[in-house]
Image 1 (tube, rainbow, N blue to C red):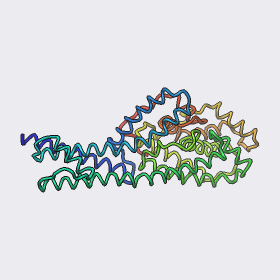
Image 2: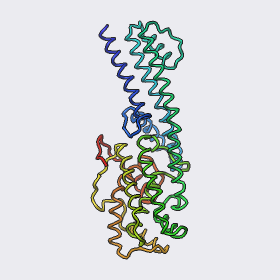
Image 3: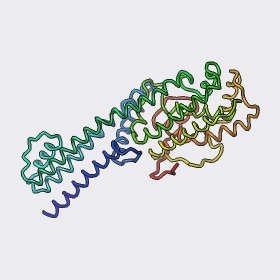
Image 4: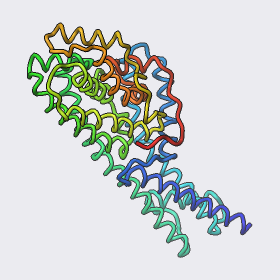
Length: 360
């Protein structure tokens, strides 16, 4: 019996430490470190939401359902942690010579929620009860502190996404973005846009891995998405660099690199398989689609380079760096349909995952 109690004590201790470690990795650690427990909670809840969205007949219905996914998972996660901590301490209290599991569970619940109705009895039980109460309060405090940080990052992200709709239309389009700049601001103002979105990409690279649930928080309106906005800006920069006859500006190059580095970093965090050195021209955009975009730009009076073959080569050379991860993230987040991103990702099967992915 003594050996059994020792084993139960160790199992309870491991369960408590594992749960506390999960909370630290999810809420405290300022870097994107995947956590199996948190991922299991979000993955399990996602399967339930997928069953619900399969019955939806329109995208609006799917979007309304998925809008509840991330907030619900975020609120369920502390409940799971508290349950596991309570279970772990129940094992510990039972191992400390309590006669029944009922008394151990009552003592654990009384300590975890600081109710204080159970009789502690003994220094060892008192010390463990105090530690459980500290952990319970700490988990609640972490959630309270975590939510404002997340919504602040969400607000910064969505401000840029909303402003993009003014210039890129709804759903956002790279060609529409260039045409509207030609009509309203002038193409010479494009470097300012690239600089703004370079900072935006750097922010989401940090926030969407260290605050992983933020990736699934949807925009205020169903037709917006941070994924399709990212794809629009990257495609616009690639088009300007490859086919639009304007002086080359390094800001476009830096925006493109910041963009595909950010998308790859987020994809890597979620375990999405991608090739860090993809083959040239291995992109989801057909040459005919590129030619149609060029024709539309020319019809709007945008000056274009004469060599279409070289322009296509240059555009595909940029697009290949973010093509796969863009489509995968659009499918993962169930983004609204937009040209050259979610309009093709939703027709593809889910990408296979692997435990290890190439470093960027």
